[in-house]
Length: 81
Image (cartoon, rainbow, N blue to C red; front, top):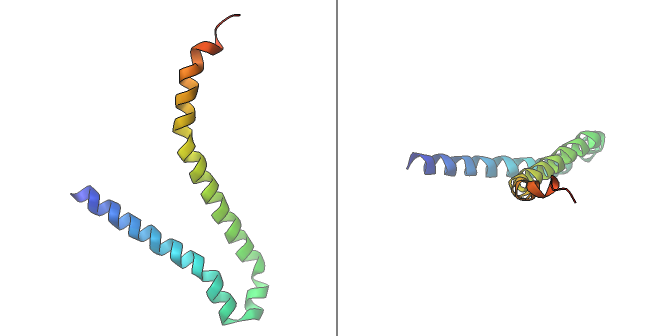
């Protein structure tokens, strides 16, 4: 039962952090357009970091499937023709 509670708390924490991170640029632009224009580079870097996180998550999810396929075909790599 404790692991379920930990998973739910982690899920809620990630949801809150993602929501805050996605709404931060919107709030900066609404607050002061001139300030948002000056911090355009920072927002671009944050967007690039977010894209990198998504790519890393995608590749990390694909790794087990790739390892399974490679180990399944590994004997074929050493076979002499």
